[in-house]
Length: 248
Image 1 (cartoon, rainbow, N blue to C red):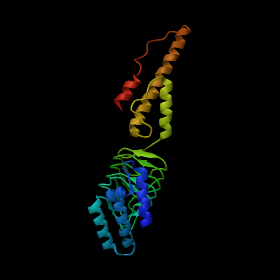
Image 2 (cartoon, rainbow, N blue to C red):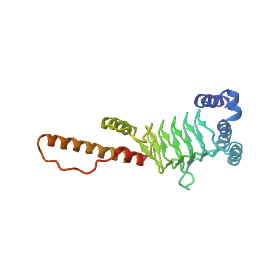
Image 3 (tube, rainbow, N blue to C red):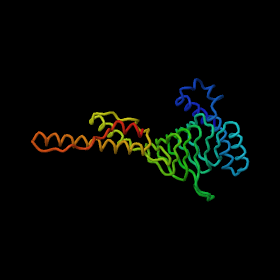
């Protein structure tokens, strides 16, 4: 148990620049306290002392504001940052080196006893503040869940999910969009790699696609005019930067 506590402290010192010493982490970090109490509660739960386990769990909730059901499986070096309002359900499984911020819920959507009802986080998952991860699915290793997202389905390893309901962002498409925007001669408004809502990104990409088509049509009209062809006046070109700014 003390070895796991040392790992918890080391994880906090590594991940939180505000942590200045081992003593500070031991005294002032409720996530560390909640995990230590959970290990006691989990051992009691596995020993069949269910009511006592729940009592220890509720004591941890009272002292830290973090509610971890004694049946939940918590990995090594889990960092619960700030932690107030975190709720982790009975059949939830949290892998090693995960980071969970305040207000996160790892909850269930079923009332069936004896079945897995809560999510599984594989190693290295980051769940941002206020996110709700609901259901018996798996969030792949290294995935990120955005703040206040409501996640209802599995996320592949290394992916980022944001929004309500949460959708997976395709980072390769973001990179292609930035390259295309640079080639077309205008900046991409309100797009940050791996951070925007997917619906917003889809609108940006549609606008960019139409803007590129307008540019191609203008080039074709200019070429026809040079060859002596008659070119009728086209409609007003799309103002891509202005539209991108409207949907940011």
